[in-house]
Length: 121
Image 1 (tube, rainbow, N blue to C red):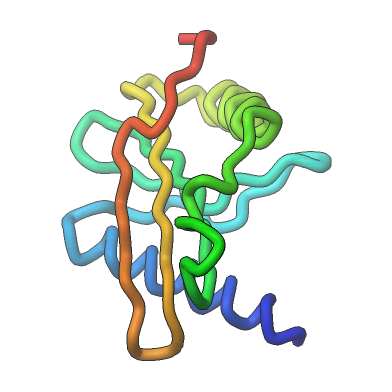
Image 2 (image 1 turned 90 degrees about the horizontal axis):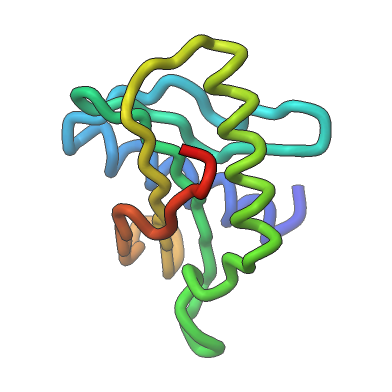
């Protein structure tokens, strides 16, 4: 596996543990439909959380969360819409971004709740 893929997987693992430590129930990881993907789908209370994970080894070129483009946001919203309809979800929906910066054993996490909203709901 390429070094950046390994770092990305490790970042997702760290993000999942971060959420679980804060009482979130992880429902899905890397859920895909056609060419759409949702990194983490979690539940906490009456909220369904769709979390986009961005991992970088350094913030030399900016924080990882700034790499989430408008196009990516549209793709996340479209994928979430499919997931919600397929699973008949009746919860409040929240879109978060979790940025993970660093290397194995030394990560910095920034959890941005309500990072963006969907015009669909």
